[in-house]
Length: 258
Image (cartoon, rainbow, N blue to C red; front, side):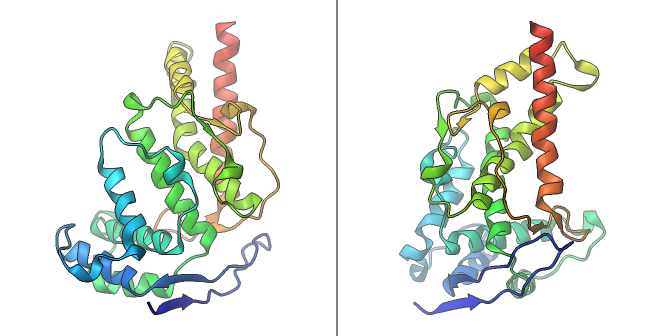
């Protein structure tokens, strides 16, 4: 199948970001995502019965399940470029639906896809969008989350460098860590600490460590879109504080308990 190669420009953002990589994906990816949106999430076209689409189809199906296995190694392993691009396109189309509420013009689906492909971000940013989806889903289903005996070994997820490994952990902190901070700080501290403790007990370990024992390694910063109304910002500046806040608030709860 013919490949589309997007050669990304060097990104300079506060002189801290590394080089972008090229992302390769099959031409059927944007065609499939557009077909989903044009047909209310369904595609009966046999041309989409392709191995190139198998991973993203399974991912979408799992996200829709109430009691899913999205936190398993199967989905945490680094996905293909096809899956990364497909999920990102789908996310941009979702954002487009809510453009009027944000004071922006809603565009035709085809135009959204065309514009998105022209401005396709780095693989790091695409990975962040993918892993944010996983941990946001776990947060949304936290009452059924039972991963206390699960260890996410970042060295077994086909991640190629420290940046990709830290992306996984910090995306977890963006959502799960944010919930910890909510339970363990503010006006409901310390009476809600028991909720925070229960939540942490149901969270997975990372490299065999409870989240507050995990140590970030040195990694390359990159720009990420957090709010479509504003310019991209530093991944480190936006995501690391979520981790630090969760650590501080939870340790305060542990001190209160002791």
